[in-house]
Length: 217
Ligand code: GRF
Image (cartoon, rainbow, N blue to C red):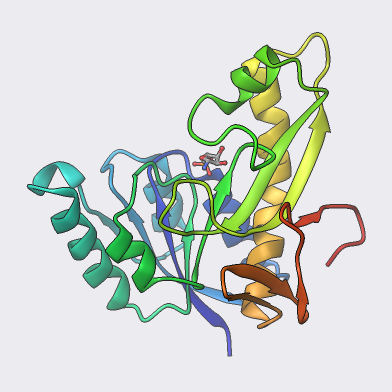
């Protein structure tokens, strides 16, 4: 049986598209039950419509507090009974109640080689810090921002000619490879969270997860 997932977005949804494409191509055995955006004009909602996936805009601006929004979001998500919630460019800080509710069944993708560069503007910050390489991490979501157990990372060298935009493009291409792979591992029940650590095929992963290389599947 396909693994039911719900995807949360706020913007373009290119990572959502990678998941849609891989599931249509039969490379990923998931059913995207719904796509939810906190922004009504997110292009990702168009992508969901085109793929005939139920989609919702739930604006945080219509709620009095972060707690009230997260509770409404949780109720909406849970109507679809997903096994996994996938944050794909969902630009919200989440309450502890929400993250605890989905503990071990919610993933995020963050554009840096965690634990480096948590938060925003990661590409420019990596350039400013004169890093030799930059990249992206998929991790389980915990109550602390960008701090849950890392599952998978992919990296790219930073060229002398790179600026934040060119680096973002390179990292995006990596995102579209590693996010579907991590979701695939979860859907195959090979990936779990146990006592705050990510385990793949029964092995505890290092603090920085698995480094992506071709042939990994
Ligand atoms: C990605 O860079 C992801 O790492 C970050 O938000 C961005 C989402 O991009 N969390 P998209 O909406 O999937 O194109």
